[in-house]
Structures are given as structure tokens and as C-alpha cells.
Length: 143
Image 1 (cartoon, rainbow, N blue to C red):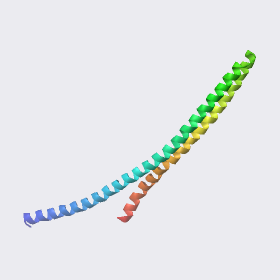
Image 2 (image 1 turned 180 degrees about the horizontal axis):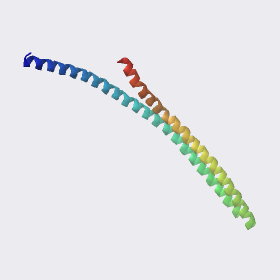
Image 3 (image 1 turned 45 degrees about the horizontal axis):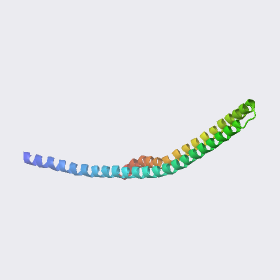
Image 4 (image 1 turned 45 degrees about the vertical axis):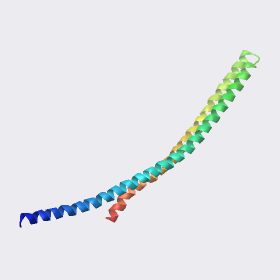
């Protein structure tokens, strides 16, 4: 076989491989592009859900602060109106106990809201990751 024939065969093999590689690269690029699009959709969904939940939590924290401030002023007023020092101490002790219990309840409520909000906001990511896991299996079956 002449050198020219060998060169043509080698060139044909390389060109055939190049075409196959180009097709594989196109499929891979398309899959990556699709994954990025899905990730963007998941981010948008999660952002919207987190934004709504954040507003609700912020409103709850403001309501809690308002309640605590009102109770604080009522306690201060009661202490100043007390007839003697012993009564003022009892009022303060009771107020301290109530404040502690109220704050625990408020912390529990806000923590529950944060937990639920986090779980809700992460659901779109869970779907996205599940789709990523399934995509290679579907590609192998198609091949």
C-alpha cells in the first residue's frame, strides 16, 4: 500500500472519529445546557418560596417584639404603682417568669416557621437533584 493510500485511510478514520466526537459533544452540551436551565428554574422557585416565607417570619418577629414591649411597659407601670417595695418585687418576679415563658413560646414558633420554610424552599432543589440522578439512566437506556 502506498503512503498516499495510508494517509487517506488515516484521514478518513480521523474525520469519522471527529464527526462522532462532535455529535457526542453536542449531546453533552445540550444535556448540560438543559441542566443549567432546570437549575435556574429551581432557584427561581425556591427564591419565591423563601421570599414569601421570609416576609411571614419578619411579620411574626415584629408582632413578638410589639407584644414584649407592651408587656414591659405594663410591668413598669404596675411596679411604679405598687404600694410598697415587696409588692414591686413580686410584680417584677411574676413579669420575669411570664417574659421567659412568652419568649420560649415565641422562639419555638419562629423556629418552626424557619424549619417549614426551609423545607418548602428546598423542595424545588430536591426535584432538580432527582432529575439529575434519573437523566444518566435515561441516556444509557437510549444509547
